[in-house]
Image 1 (cartoon, rainbow, N blue to C red):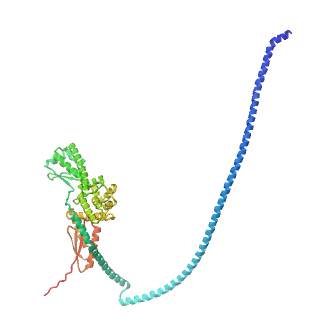
Image 2 (spheres, one colour; image 1 turned 30 degrees about the vertical axis):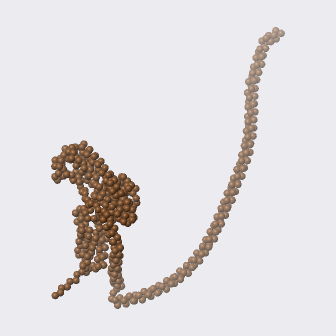
Image 3 (cartoon, rainbow, N blue to C red; image 1 turned 180 degrees about the vertical axis):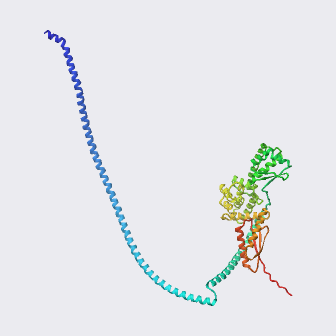
Length: 523
């Protein structure tokens, strides 16, 4: 009993502890087991749900695939039907083409047969013609042999004689025809041309002026030369550097010569030297001031001159920069004739002639004024004054008639309007009138000699004279060798050769003189 009591007192907690341990161990063991079991159940459930979803997806996919296959089959069948239809159409076309080719083949065979028949017929005819030709040739040879015996002349000699007679007869007929036609044309146009030119010239009068191409500055005394040269030449170097000219100081008393291809620079140099001589203070600083002042004055003069010319001629709406080029012509000369005065003169003459012909007078004046505009800068730009002038006119928007007048006034380009022809005539009148231009003596003598040599190179000419400063050429011919018709032809040949081989201002009149004298002495 004591043991039981002791056991009760001591063993109960132990038993409780053991039971607690057993229960805890059981819990520790069974809780993961139950969790695992629950997880397995959840996994099986998820797998079943996934299998069900997969089964649904598979069934849907199979249905969609069957639908897509069905649609693809429908499209394929449709495409096959279309291809079959196209193939059927192509077969029909090919069948039709084959039928057409068969018909053409039959037609070609028929034509070939016909051509063969014709060819055989032609061959037979050619053989017959060859026989006839050989027979005719035999007869002709016999006739020619008989004619050679009778005429005592070979066939070649007879041919040459015939050609010579025909050539002589035809050349005379051509010359006579040309002479008659020229006379008829002169009768019709001379009166009108004289009336027109006479009216134009009577309405215009221009002073004849000449300008030098080398400027000369007069000095008050020879001491001024030393002052212009300066110490160790510093003044003259400064002048030449600023002005862009050559100053020639030689033994000529009280004179300095300014040499430069640019006429505007030459004018600025002349004005600067005259101002420095008048001022008396000649040193590099003062030289620079005077040169700048003279440049501004020349630019103002150029601008003012262009405006005045446009106002004087009554020409509206000309570009201001183009008018400056017109003003620059004041300092440009050609054969001693002022380019500006020449351009104004051509403008007046062109306007008058255009008015008489019922054309646009202002347009003709404009073309006449600008026909030599390229000369304003031909010493600065590459190309002839005609090419430069055309480029300037295009640049500043001038009308096509004006551009063509500039290009054609020397015959470089074909004139496309009546105004262009008028400008060409006015340019010739202005340049060719007596006193308008001066010429270097050496060039003048060479031109006269060349004219006389051209005349003497023709057979039948025994003397020639260049008269009126080379503007008229008189040719004396031997009357026994040159008849009246040949004289007319000779004048035309000389004229064409002069036009092709020579360069000359204005016009040259060629006169062929044939004189036959019959002299007898009464005793």
